[in-house]
Amino acid sequence: MINIVLFGKPGAGKGTQAEFLKEKYNLTHLSTGDIFRFNIKNDTDLGKLAKTYMDKGDLVPDEVTIQMLQSEVDKNPQSAGFLFDGFPRTLAQADALDQFLASKGQSITATVALEADDNILVARLLERGKTSGRPDDQDEEKIRNRYDEYNQKTAQLMDYYKAQGKFHAVDGIGTIAEVTERLTAVFDTF
Ligand SMILES: Nc1ncnc2c1ncn2[C@@H]1O[C@H](COP(=O)(O)OP(=O)(O)O)[C@@H](O)[C@H]1O
Image (tube, rainbow, N blue to C red):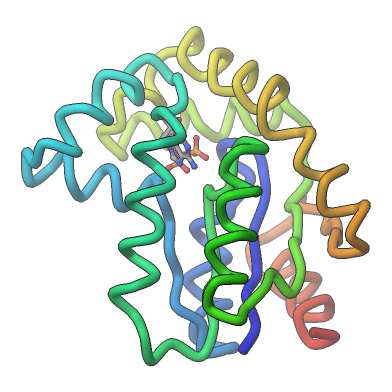
């Protein structure tokens, strides 16, 4: 069983690449952003709560996010491995994930970061906002706030995984196919 964390700033292409990677490596793809958006669409209590944070570009509180992620993992007991996308985003989440996996005799195999320059990413998100309907993609201030959240809370996770020898970086600039090829070269070593 392999468990991979896909890292990257907003707009780095995690979702796009995850669609391909989950098929090729037979992984269950869990995107916390997608799960929150699904809950918002269906107007669940979780969705109503998450929306108040997401619309501003703030992170949803750890307690809520961790519990949700664990319940999604538990819904897939037959899984051959997980591709975590958008989780963990804080040290508390990373700790919780390690403990949760350990309780199942599992661990994180590796983390892979898709790297890209902020200015390119902001432009990509504003473009996506024109068609995605995502309120957090339509306003540069909200986008910048997501980068602040990333820099303050998520960036430090790279050191957390580097210290464990589980960190890999991939250049996220290029065509979708070029980036897929780079990712595949790294995933094939796991
Ligand atoms: N692990 C998480 N912890 C807290 N909030 C999260 C987490 N994952 C997603 N979210 C919320 O969902 C929003 C959208 O996430 P996502 O779809 O991954 O978008 P992106 O990476 O493009 O910003 C985040 O800005 C945040 O509000």
